[in-house]
Image (cartoon, rainbow over all chains, first blue to last red; front, side, top):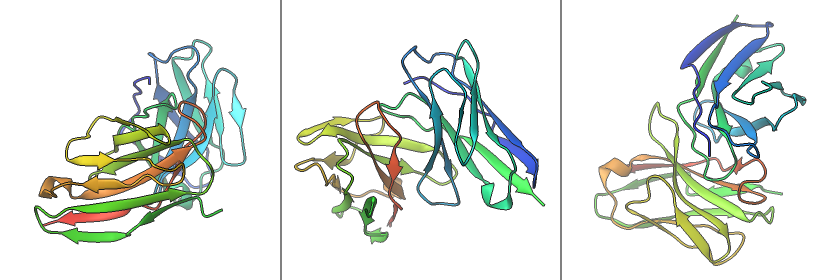
Length: 107
Length: 113
């Protein structure tokens, strides 16, 4: 699995878009990028994944750069309930969850 | 589907005691894994299994044993509990190793005194 790097924390105003970056420069060509989030001390929750193309689902959008060395998770209209730790994972095998990004959505 | 279930939710052990954390999934997933999460930290992989009868070590396996006799169950055994094993333990499963998103259980909060 690829090593990933994420900022430690970010703030976002309620109703605005939250853009969470992730660097995964060592990702191999056939490894997907996965995003999860963890609210309080609950089990992590899957958000979205992608390989090369940008992806969108009901929760978020995922933008992957053409060289696949980085990606951005976009929460289009952040709410207070989106306050959580967000993890970016390179690959889906023996996944290593780093410390993630703590996103705080403020009123 | 119940998804991934874990028991117990909370447990307090004394140093040197042993116990088994239970994990079950009803999604017919091949891949199952155990993580521990210490306060303020990310998740670290303890052991994983790519199918019934097959297990392997993750990054922090010392002090833990696992077995996978069925597709559904993946118990984690603490052999001789130590205060350093105080943590929250999460079990997860996915369709197949290196394929598909992981589904996580609610966690077991373990305190070793």
